[in-house]
Image (cartoon, rainbow, N blue to C red; front, side, top):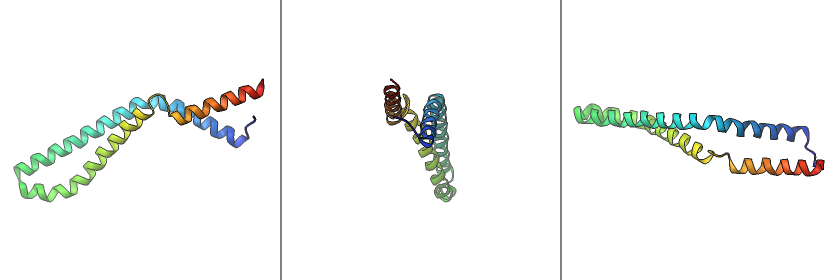
Length: 108
């Protein structure tokens, strides 16, 4: 089995992505935890504002809730991606192993 130049570029890109994921997984977890903490602080801030001044709290609530939920979703997505790809993306790893085996068999 021989690969064309375009296929070799795609395979090398997949290898780079796979290597980068091993380095970036801790950053993904850290960003996810930080984002969830920021969202938690936002929820806490809104709760305190509602207790101190209900009118101001109800005025600020709709404006602040959407960005807080977006930050929380971003954090959860980062954590979920890090957990899913902790040992590498299964599809990518399997495909790279199959390509390596085919290339090794064709050389022999």
